[in-house]
Image (cartoon, rainbow, N blue to C red; front, side, top):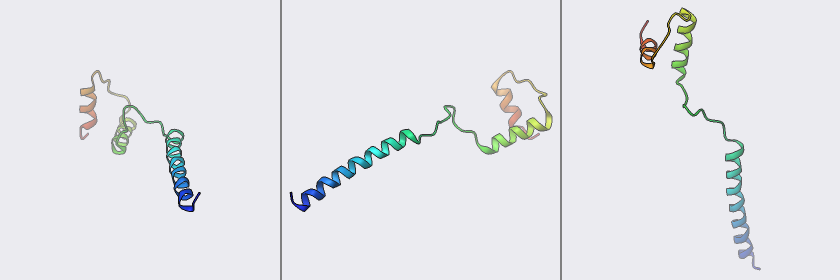
Length: 74
């Protein structure tokens, strides 16, 4: 075998190994994702601040009333 042929063969093997490593990394290092998505940090802070300030005074029966309360400027 000539040097050029060996270089091509090794290059193909390296490419194959790189693709395999990328696949393995995707599986091993994949972080579990929340199926509902992620909340904005400002929204979480706002809800927690209101919860601690007032206590559980409200009982929400629908999502609309909850959102109306959370989005209010009080």
